Image (cartoon, rainbow, N blue to C red; front, side):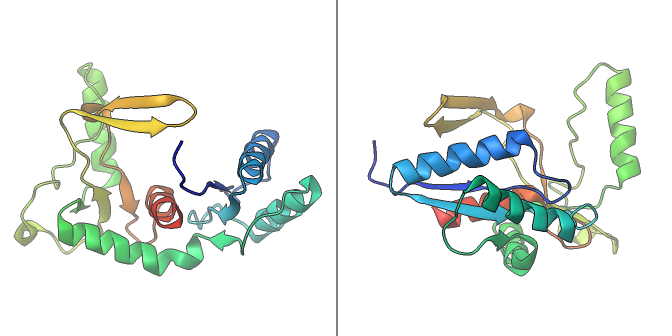
Length: 196
C-alpha cells in the first residue's frame, strides 16, 4: 500500500434528486476516507446546463446534511470551473491529444444506422480525427479526445484489481460541446488528476 493520502469524492449530478444509490456511494466514500485519515470531497456535476437545477443542487446539500456526511473544503461546482476546463481542452488540441469534430448529430446517427444495417460496430469513427486544419469548415464543432486505437488500456483499481479495456472498443469521447461547455468526461477526469 502506498503512502499517498486517501482522497475520495462524491459527485452527484443535480439533474434530479439524490437517490438511494447515490447516498450509498456517498456513505461508502465518506467511510473510506474518514477511516484512513483522508479527505472526502463534494463535487457537483452541473455541466449539463439544460438539465441541472438549483432546486436539485439544494436538495443534494440537504441530503448530505441529513445523512450526517460532512465534506472537506467547499463543494466544487464543475460549471463554475468551466474556463479552466476549456483551457485544458485547448492544451489537448495543441498537444494533438484531442481534435475538432464537425460531424453533425444527423451525420453521426446516419453512420450508426448504416453500421447497424451492416452488422458492424456503431462506435462512431469521426472523419475529422486526422483532418488537416486547412480543411476545417467555419461551422460549430465539438472537441473529442483522440483515444488510442491499438492495444489495451489497463486501470489499476484498488477494489477490482486491474481492469483492462481494448482500445479499439473506446470512443473518441466529446470533452467540449459545440457551445464550448465541458462535458462530464473532461471535467471529472481533469479534476481527479489535479486533486489527488
